[in-house]
Length: 253
Image (tube, rainbow, N blue to C red; front, side, top):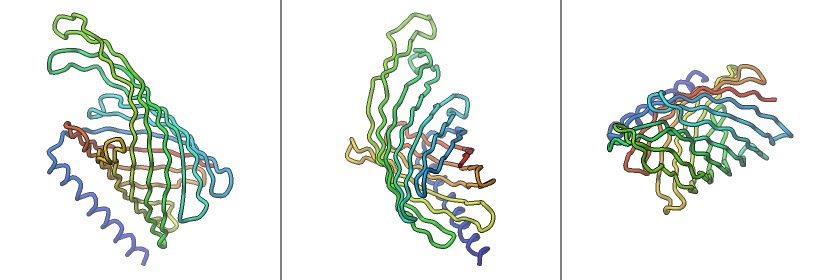
């Protein structure tokens, strides 16, 4: 019976993975590839209540450029097995690499500091070794103003600085996830799809992110996670799709 459940789950993953590359091809979007390395510490306070601290480094542009550095903290409370609530804060350093525009203007590299606050509620449905969950997350991100120098790439003549204005973003993230805890193995494969809606623009869909991954509990206190994520950017004329490979580590106590 266990092998049959595993076969059905991995068949679902295979079908799931097959749909979205076809979706990407149909969109004719620009494709990018990046890597993510993240690590965190999780502390259980009382039953159902825990706090976490996490950090992440992410690349873009075929892994050639740094994309962001993130550090954050969160609090999670699960009073019953069917419901969870959590809130957190992240500081994000968004890096923009030096580049030349189509007009031949060169812009120096610069950082945009971001402050992100989020609040989530999750409904959880255990079905034997399977678990289905639906998470709704409100996310507010404040980007600080940033300035970068510009010059003519051919003559070296200084131009007016590039100014990235301060802004606020309000997003509702809706994630549906299915996972299967393989008995007596510590291995839990999962799949998820998440929709990003802009609350400041009449719930306009901005991104769709689909993820296929696996969590591995090495010991009681140490766990690893590996996943592939396909992110389709829906909210701009560039329509960039990102393929992200990630590895994560967590220490729990």
